[in-house]
Each structure stands twice: as structure tokens, then as C-alpha cells.
Image 1: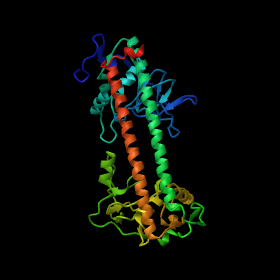
Image 2 (image 1 turned 30 degrees about the horizontal axis):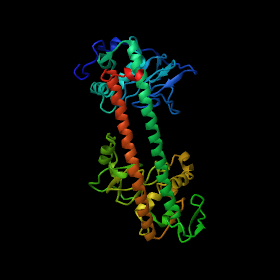
Image 3 (image 1 turned 180 degrees about the vertical axis):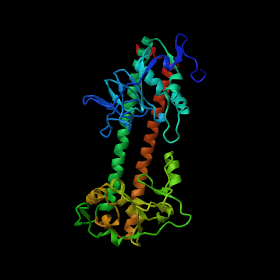
Length: 414
């Protein structure tokens, strides 16, 4: 196999179906003491099992696959996610897993091979379905796998586990560092939009529980004093926009490019969509979780969204930060009784949460302060994220090299 390259002379290269048995047992009735493994319970790329509270106990068809300890579960849905675990207990799993029982290979050897980039690419190439690609056993079983003697497999895997454990520990530390930076970023924003940036400014009780004390010269007003609701229908030629927590309200095509995935586009009742302008704010049900979204482009949004036009006393960047702050989102959630009545979140609910209102020039100064402070934090986050990407790439390359015999790990095993 040219794509595998040379392997040690005493290794064999055989089809995967020669070294495993596909388990096809299914059940409708899952014993209460059995653990269930869903796709969402398996961490992508690492093959770690992390039970999720949201995991369903059966697949959509009501069936579950049955597996034993030592079986390898491989996620055939969207194989590019690279989800595979070695079972440490007897249980049941989503039928989106292939249950593979190794015969002449160590389970973790098979798992490591299935998680390599090279095998993933070949499994992807054989998938059926564009939106929900699935791999089939006939194609996976026909793919080759390098097979050294079992004792050598165990030796290589033991050394590999120690090395990757060190990498994983470093990744965990860097991930926690990013979490701390994100917390610091949010704290900087929340303090600036609720307390200002002048530490010497006298404070007063805002009279609003979620705000607490605010600078004495600030006003506290109803959102109706700052925003008006726009119900203008979509104009001819309006591009479709997507309201996202991550990017704000941006063109749908831009969102797909940033996320590298396709989104189902609305095709009915397009005339009911609402027109928005840059600087407007959009309220959706997701605002309960991520705050109100600021519009970044001219176009149209779903008719179920509420569109707010900012008045002359509104600095978009200041209120954009305020309406995405944790304190504001928590206050907005306190208006959530309407959810039980099946209503959409709209301006009538947002009006219940009073907002701080500094003078316009101070709003500008605070927005500048936030942009400068978050830019420094964002740069450090990006640098740390890149270092994690490099560590993950190194981890993947190391595993591939080990299971194809490209590096000698025997010295490390001593």
C-alpha cells in the first residue's frame, strides 16, 4: 500500500475484516444497569468516553447495539469526527456505531488505526449521503491495517499511551488557561458596561437588582427610551442573514464559510422576513442564552425575530457589549415565564429589563476601552489555541507513525 509506506519486515498488512468480527446483536429492551453509549458521549479524535446527561437510551428506531468489554465502537455517522472507543464494560450503544470485536489485534491497536487521519480520509471517500454521511462496514472492512505481533502491539501502545498522556495533560492545561482568559474577558466587559472605567467616579444605587451600583452621573432607563421596534418586511434583493451568538447577525453565506458547513435555507414565506440595517439589534429565542445580537450587514432575518432600531443616544458597540454580558443575560432569563406559555421572546419582554445609560461620549470611551482590552486577551487566546492545534497535530502524527512502524518506540519502553 503506497499510502501506508514501508512497515517493518515482520509485520503483516491485511484487510480490517480479517482481524475483527462485526457484532450485529440488537435489543429493544435495555437493562437498567447497563450503560448506554451515544455518539455525543465520545470525544472526537481522542477516543475518550465522557457520558453525557443528554444522551438518549436508544436510537431513533428504538434499537440499540450490544457490545462487550474489549469491543471497539466506531462512529459510522460523519466519520470525519473520528469517534471511536474501546469498551470497558458490557452495554448498549447507538446503532450509528459499528461494534467490532478484535481477534488477532489488540483493541486499542484497532482503535488507534481507525482514528488516524489517513484511514479517516479513506472512510470518508466511501461514505453515502451528503448532509449526513455514513460509512458502511463493507468499505471499512476492506481497508488495510498493519499487524505486528500482539506482544509488539502491546509494547508500542504502552509507550504511546505515556507519550500521548503527557501531550493530553499539556492540552488540558492550555484549555483551562483559555477558559480563564475567557472569564477575564467577560469580567472586563461586564465591569466596564455596568460600572464604567473611571475608578474614582462616585457611585449610586441603580434601583435595579441586576445592576447594583452604577456611576452617580449615569441614567437608568427603559429599553423603550433607547430602541424602537422595526417591523419592516424584507426588501427586494435583501440577502439572507443568520443571527448567531458567535458572530452576530451576518450573511448566511459568510456564516457557512466561517463554520465550513451548510445550513438549511428558508424557502417558504420569504415575503414575511424582516428587513434589518447595520447597527440594528435582533431578538431571538437564543437571546435567552447568548444575549441580543447586533446586525453587521444589510439584509433580512426570520419573521419570528424582533428587530430593534437604535436611537440617537445609543453607541452600538457599548450596547452591543452590554446586551451580550452575563449579567444582562441572567436578568433577561428572569422574564422567562412566557416560555411556558409558548410565546416567542420579543421586545415586550426585553422592555422589562432596565438598562444603564451613560452619556454618548462616555459610551464611546467605554467601547474603545473594551476593544483595546479584549484585543489583547483575544490575541493571547488565539496564540494558545494555535499551540493546542499544533499539539493535536503532533499527537495524531505520532500515533500514525507508531502504528505504521515509522518510529522506533522500543527505547522509550525500556
